[in-house]
Each structure stands twice: as structure tokens, then as C-alpha cells.
Length: 240
Image (cartoon, rainbow, N blue to C red; front, side, top):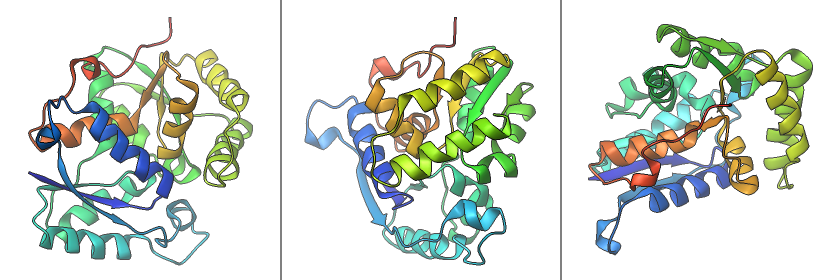
């Protein structure tokens, strides 16, 4: 089976997503790996700016156009390594006529399975204000906790001023927000932006987080009938 990937949102996150797919596959040889087609289009307009009404450039238009091109290449399903773009999930799936893997729903389901009740969320302003994580979490009987305004500004700095700007992310910024969410009662924190996945990788954060991009990668492999390495059976360890 063939996976289509709509990439470039941003480019580094797309490259890391491909790395995750390869590393998570339980492969004995090259032929065991997933066949994929990546359409990397960094010119897609900013998702957060559009969702918040700060831009009239609609990112879903080029995303759907790319999705249709991928479907023409006979992909089984599509993954978009950009969590904010999941705001448009249903429209993309409907207009491309192709299954689009939903990292947010899959993440919420895993947390429900684990019996957790209070979930912290780190994500872009667009993701937070559109409530796409909170709504899924609440559907599963849990409570979503988001950073207070001054801490949310720190999250946006990590995403836009550090990682998207090509700088090394400051782990202390992350620690400040993580402590804030833990003090609010979070049992685990969703890293709900693909740029935050790069921070987790760089600093090897092991406890108290679930990375939505790792969930997306695992779901993509399962959907395409690929074996996942046993060490990825569990994707997170809650706070003590």
C-alpha cells in the first residue's frame, strides 16, 4: 500500500515525519518499508493566520489540490504532518475522496484507553482557539487543559521564533509551560504541533508527553498494513 504525504507545513516537520515512519517500521529489509509519495509544498499559506482571521489566504485550497494529485497516484490514504491543518480534515477528506488520517482523534483515543482524565495541550494559537483538540478530548470523556495567555505566547515563540526560524529551541521555555500545565492538573501533555515534535526529539523528552506526530506516523503505518516495532506499542509515559 502507498501513503501520500502533504508536506512542507513546515519542511523540517515533514522530514522528521518521514524519519519517524522509517524508524517505527518493523522492517528486516528495504522491501519491508512503506511506499510513500511526498508532495512538499512550503508555499501553502499559514494555517494559524487563516484560522484566526489574520489572513485571507486559504491554505485548504492548495492542500486539496495536492491531495487530488496524490490520489491520482493511487495512494491508499493521506497524512498531513501539520496538526493545525487538521482543522480542515473533514473538508480535505470529502473533496479529495481519499482517507485522511486524523492524528487528533487517534491521540485522544489512546489517552482515553489509558484511563487518563486531565490532558494538557501545547499547540499553535489556531489549534487552541479552534478547539480541535479540546473537542476530541471532551468527546472521549476527558478534560483538556490549555496554557494561560502568557504561557501560550511562550509556546508560539518556541514554534515560530525558534523552530520555524531555524534556531535551536530553548528547552527552558518548554519546561516553564510544561510545569504550568502540570500544576493545572495535567497527567500528560499533548505536543500538538509538529514543530514541538522536533523539540521532543532534540531533548529526548520521555515523561509526561504524547507526541501527536508519533501517533500520526504509527496510525499511517497501521493503515497501510505495515508492522510497527514493539517498542512503539506505548507512545507515552504520564507524569508521576
